[in-house]
Image 1 (cartoon, rainbow, N blue to C red):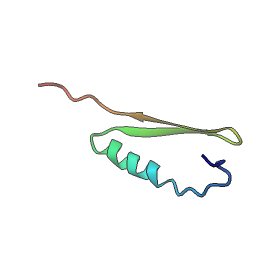
Image 2 (image 1 turned 60 degrees about the vertical axis):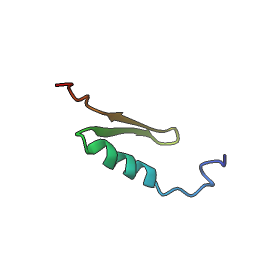
Image 3 (image 1 turned 180 degrees about the horizontal axis):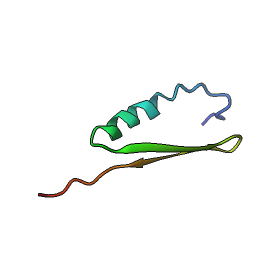
Image 4 (image 1 turned 60 degrees about the horizontal axis):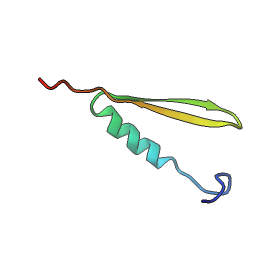
Length: 50
C-alpha cells in the first residue's frame, strides 16, 4: 500500500456505504481529529422476525 498522503482518494466508497446503510434506516457517524485520523461508525437496525 502507498502512504495515504501520496495516494489520491475521492471518498466515493464512503458515499456508497452511506447510501446502503440509510436504505433500511441506519446511519453513519464520524469522529475526526487533525493529524490523527478519522473513525467511521455505522448503525444498522435489526428487523424483527415477525
